[in-house]
Length: 120
View 1: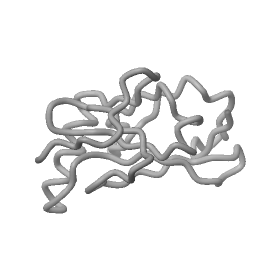
View 2: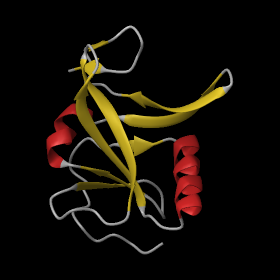
View 3: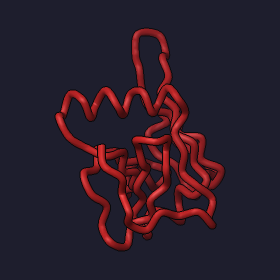
View 4: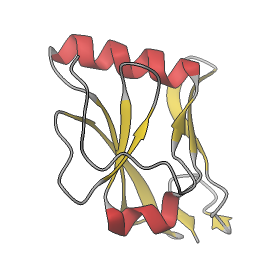
C-alpha cells in the first residue's frame, strides 16, 4: 500500500483501530483487492438518531480528516461526521457466533435498545 499524504491529523482526538479491527480491515482490503484504510461516517437512522457507516477507502477526499492506523492503514473521517466520532476507538469482536465492529465512542450520550443507533 502506498502512503497517503492528504490531511493527516495530529492535533485532534484521533479515531483509532484496535489490532483486531486493523487485522479485519486488512482482510477486507485483501478480499477487495484494493484499499488504503477504513472510512468511518455517520448517517441519520434508528430511534436514537445516528448510525455508523463503514467502508473501505481508496483515496481520501481533500477535506477528510486522516488518522494513521499503523504503518499501512488509515482511518478516514468526513469533516461533518468528525464531530460525532472524534476520539472513537473501533474494535472487532466476537459475540457468540457473530463477529462485528464495535465502537467505543466517548461522545455517545444514549443508545437505542437494539444497539443500532446512538445520540450525541
